[in-house]
Length: 219
Image 1: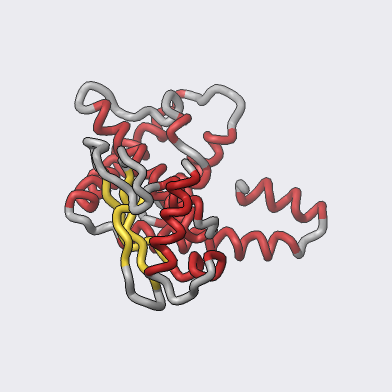
Image 2 (image 1 turned 90 degrees about the vertical axis):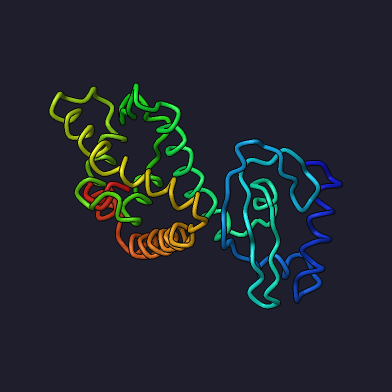
């Protein structure tokens, strides 16, 4: 990000914030909407051109909104909740884009396309109720596995992807089209609280207990 774009971002944010100090002002904002510009022709509030991922951020004190704002500018806020919302949501959108790219000729294969998955994304799919707890645990185990999957594991992964994840991705596509993405952003925030609480509980245990917990809860 060019320095001039960074200063333009700060100027625009401060004009629309209650606080007039950048460190305080950036804490007033949250993401409320998201769009994709497939033409990559949008311009950020910082004047950076050729945006694909377009966010709307909302100031919880002044009620002001800024749009469009790109991923790079979101990161410049250095606010964990904003990064959390953006990270989970973009991973999900990229998986949906892969499904669209494959079309009818090919479907996503969990093992062949593992680079498009992450532990966070798998937990996010559960939070969105696209998959259930048992399916999440299975996918996390497979994601962590070093050995090649068995035929039975491949079949179960195929069922999860085609019978559960694909319908969920179709809904993602429709929600983006209809500009209805609030629940995805809220789910990302909920995941943050989930992992924070899990960490605080985990921190209380002894070393031996921690090793055991890592094994049984697939951290």
